[in-house]
Image 1 (cartoon, rainbow, N blue to C red):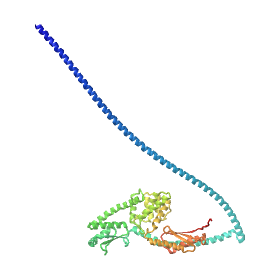
Image 2: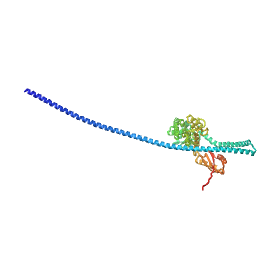
Image 3: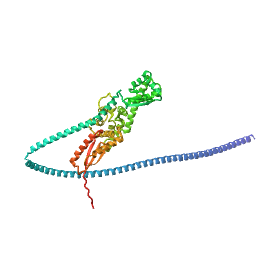
Image 4: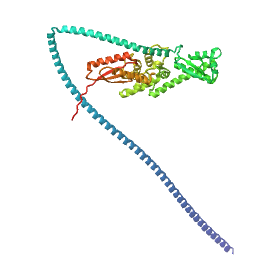
Length: 519
């Protein structure tokens, strides 16, 4: 019985083992199946992620490629446009070059033809000279036979007559030079005196060189004078300008020849009046401050003048002297404005003549720089200006233009001549030197009427601001020989009856016209 029981237990254990093993095996297979499912899910997710990343990268690459393509196309288009523009410019230049070549060829052909005509004329002239020599020789021989006088005797008599005539003409020229010097000496002396007075700035001033300072009330005059006159004495000592306190209501007068110092005095006095503190120490302080400000203002004025005329790269010393010209006058004409006008005129004329316009402007702007120097330097303003320009390394043509614009020395360049002409134009135009338009017109009318008073004169024209008169004459009454005599007579009458700056050119024009009609 026990054996059966044990067998049963063994059988049950075996069954339990078999069942456990089967259950374990089934559970493992289920886990494996689940793991496989999980693995497949992971793989599918990974594939989806990979596909998504792949698409994103492809889109990014595509966008980048599109941008690069667009940039490339834009750059290519820009270069293509540049090339087209360059081709157009080159084509235009080629056309211009072809035109110039054609023009040069045409001119060369014309020159060749002109040379040929000149050669032919030279041959004809040589033949005529030979023939003329032969005729003269024959005429001389005939004259010797007729007059019974040898060639040497005739030459001696002719030389004596020519010497007498030359003496008469030279005496007449000497008289004309003296008369002209008498006429112009007074005006030139006035100019020299005015220049010397302005540069010297002497204490003995005149009433025409004054500035008026307005006062807020009459009591201010007493404060300006100060106790026992100490304020006014301190002011005059600091500025070098005379202060005139008279009966003029609410105003005082500043008198002095130096416009720059007078301007410093005017600004200083106005500031003292506004400040109210008027005493010797304050006066010196304000005058010193205004003097420094005026130096800066002078530099600014010089730089502005250079900017307006297009002149560059000048030394600061030259700029400062140029600014000082704003406080100088010549015959009432502001020297800085005159210098700028000369620069414009010289530059325009130089450009028209194909010369260096920039150098002409520079020469014109600095041509009167010597007028900015005070009494500490002796000499004419042309000499002083030339020395200054040399010292500050200006161009040799600029130096020559400064020194030759009043014909003190010979010009070395056409630009120097242009500056001389521009200076004359600026100084002689209507209104430049305190000559009213009415007086200017009357002078021109008198000049024309004076020339028309001669017999044989048809019409006269005053041109070049009255510096030239052109006289049209009747060809039947006035021949070539009388034309020269008429020009001399008109010039002499102008010298005797008129006053004018500089000189007047008289041009007599004799013209013959032959007219017919085709029917």
